[in-house]
Image 1 (cartoon, rainbow over the protein chains, first blue to last red):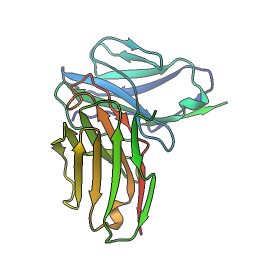
Image 2 (cartoon, one colour; image 1 turned 45 degrees about the horizontal axis):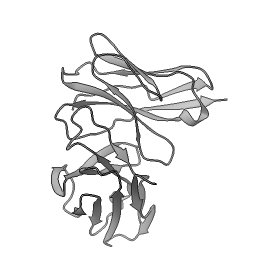
Image 3 (spheres, each protein chain N blue to C red; image 1 turned 45 degrees about the vertical axis):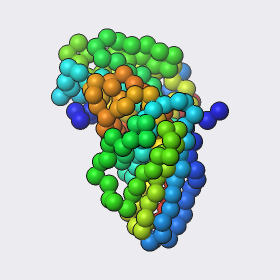
Length: 110
Length: 116
């Protein structure tokens, strides 16, 4: 699997936007960029994914660099409930194995 | 309704015992997975089944054996438990056999296994 690099932790104030970066310089042309998050004491949950274009859904936005070597997960207004570990993962069109790195631990303060 | 459920939520047992963790999904998915999350929070895939057939078997000791009685269930049996098996085990399911780039996985709440 192509590797991703994320900061260990980030902090945000409630109701402010959060930009979570992910570097994936060895990404291949067929790799999709997926983001999952894991709330405390819960299983991971899907957030968003994309290939080349920026993506929006009800949870977040995904901004993908033109060269695809990095991406940013954007939470438009952080809430206390968004405090979690956020994982950036690359999966190709035929990928089976899915191993998560350490992710970014997001702390949201009131 | 819970999409992916696991039982038990907590499991405390002695070294050398044999135990099972059950997983059920009601999403109609064809593929199910088992993951292990260690104390450092790394989450690694162990097994994947598609329509009751094993399609992924990562480097996992033979003491771990998945069993899929039907495509809605994937149980994990662990023989001769060791201290190093202590971890949180997550079951997951998806509609595609392997993530196929665009598919998403749905995870269960996890089973915290403690081996004494």
